[in-house]
Length: 125
View 1 (tube, rainbow, N blue to C red):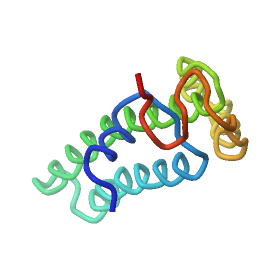
View 2: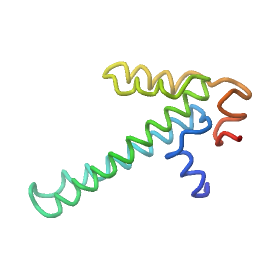
View 3: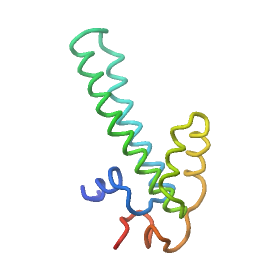
View 4: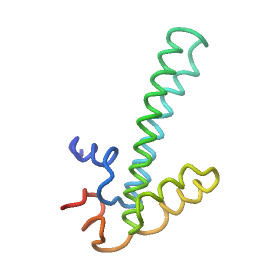
């Protein structure tokens, strides 16, 4: 199992590059973390204290996962030797689906590039 510093880098820091598999699997984990409180929210009576708790947990998970999705996309773009600012396209409806498929399917640049020497590790100064 990876140590916590690698997981912190993967989900919260924009430096470095990630491969297609790491991007997809990281995004899948983020989606599961986001979906669980939403699922629990649907199981409890509306307006109850438990409902309020699960909606708050979902809100927190959504905000954290939003940042994590952006960070994963930035690092995936870095692997393609593109600037991370292009990750903003993920906020455009319909275009975001195409962008996600491109990030999942197109291979990264082999060898070192300006964003790092290798995929799946932070950029080294």
